[in-house]
Length: 299
Length: 282
Image 1: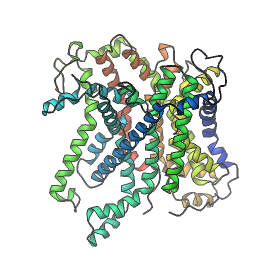
Image 2: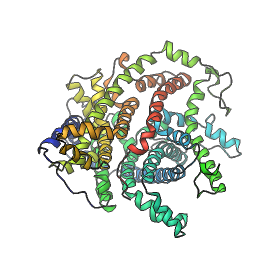
Image 3: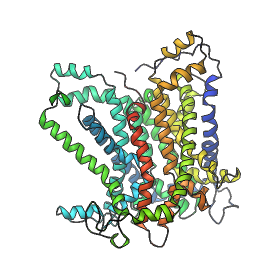
Image 4: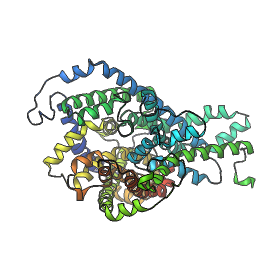
């Protein structure tokens, strides 16, 4: 994985790459950099619905309030667990299905189409459909559990079950992305490698360990990085399936801040909270990319 | 018969593979079917304890109401305009920026790459209020443009990243032969690289389209005029009524997901080759 030589495109003037990237930079500058700077600033103010026009600078008070609140740490811990469990299942299920699909198999395109469905439909529709399926008396999941002789589960009313419910929903939403990324990677691994391993009498497990995983690394590392960031910041599923409830028991950081901002209109506090989330992810991203030496795939 | 399968797969293994794929396909399909099932229920059987795949007394009445009595078609028209414009802008902007990142080493390149990754890390609520204030100042509330611009900005970081990954897999020799023939860089990009990159272009168009088609939070603050509502905002108004009209809502939800899912499935053959976040070097 040698870094590609920075060859210069012959005859191209120095400013050409800036012309190519100018539209993107303009758009992102206007819609991301400017609002971001403003958002950072709001974190140092007491803006709220009462103080919408006459808010003032209050220094680090929001940050102190967040970081000294024990609830912050319990929600942070839950967010980490949420992210780890989700991404673990996204990758294992996605990779497993990709391996099953990556072979000569009649009906393969039909399975691939059906398996990509969770990704193909709008998230809010899927999340609301799961919410009705988790309903205690009439939801499909409890009806199914009863049909096979198991007791119904209090999916949306008991904290642990509710957490399981949002995780199931999000695992369902996220595995097709990892499946398609893995499938693309698998298809570009030369078959001869496996044939040579067969000649040597390698077991399926050692072929997976020695050929598949190392060659998929450059594809999986950027996908997993993105997957972790997206899952960490997933508002839709939590907000729509449990609303963070019962109580705050299934809130993750981003749904917590979402409620602070839009249910309670504490804009300054929410902006400071968002900054904290962003810094946590930034620290994670820098370390993860460095530790996994995935930069060649990422950049 | 045997030649249809992989030579190394034994019969018991094939049975296992099919069982696993069928089970997982049913798991994928059921929540979608659940929406369809609810959309067919007359109001009095919304709360039913049957697991039948087609409900008792199934009726298309919810669809009739959604199509002819509720403004669903208007919402769909708005969504279509906004989503198509977002897809077009998204593709144009990310195709060129991705090319710059793949083929040139320029001063701000590495910073730009890192910046694209960090845009994925801002929690959505962080940008919402500033975006709203900015759109207000630009006079873009209650306009299509007021949605298209933020949607395109949301969609392009991932698309640029993906386009760049795909261009990286196209050998440079292809452009270099064009230079020898006297073509300029822009001509080589336009005539040689873009056609080869069509799978990745299709995927970034798809993702941009889907971003706009499913977005609710920004639309909710930009739009106050009901005639401009997009599908997500419109559908949610059905839920904010006294009691959620689940049957109506489900019919609308199904009509919303059909175009998106159809487009996704049509383009999904490009997904395997076009979704290149990094490349396998065998």
